[in-house]
Length: 243
Image (cartoon, rainbow, N blue to C red; front, side):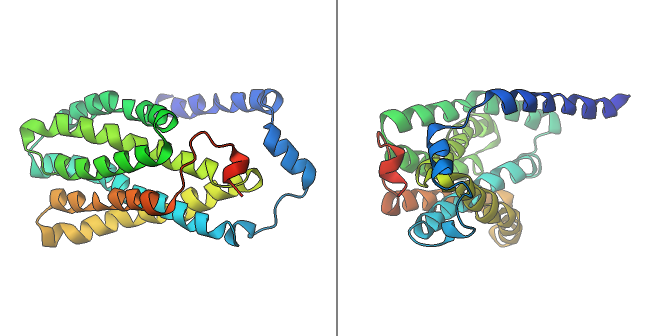
């Protein structure tokens, strides 16, 4: 069957749906919210005060994150091959090693957010990720591997940070809507714009490397949002935060 067999493999996860449907319970908070309002929140409630301000801030957090994140993922191979002279196999090897070693950023960010705090961890990782983007896309050929490991370590944590704020800043009855609006709708504008901006900047700046390096400013802007506008949520119950 060749490649068609992969589609059969893709059916397997559907079997998990039956287990989830019968075994995964709703959270206590959701059950209480549904009991209090069986029809759920009104459409557009999350777009009105007092939730609108948080919606805009968290959406900008996702948007700025995706502007930096997508630029790296989309253009690293082009940069390494066209501007540093690597072959496809060399880029594949560097990427495989870098992603394997750098995935610890997920765990490190989560642990630090619980131990140190959401705000200091987010500010540190967004800022370091932005700086690492510039360094990785300016690195000489011999340092591409180590520079990419450092970048991936900080960059993978973006998802942990943004996901945590999305989950904690909105009340239970609106949390799924918040994720849909901030990440999957408004935030994805950054994912769409990133290739456009890199393509536009590459010519005037002299290449993909300088263009993606400049995109590292966007995660630093995300750090600014956390610093100036988002509250610390460490050790707080959801009822104390998502009013």
